[in-house]
Length: 59
Image (cartoon, rainbow, N blue to C red; front, side):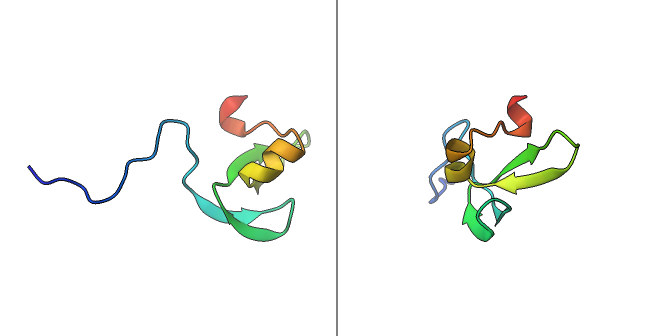
């Protein structure tokens, strides 16, 4: 059996990379955020914590 040389991410650990709409830069660990108007944006883990955003998956 082959062993992976990469570490597996722990459950619940964000692993995506994308554009954070809150601080207008690319970041690791972005989460999808649905706003009250139905718009969907991505926010990094740092902005989720600062702005007290609720990721779409956690609603």
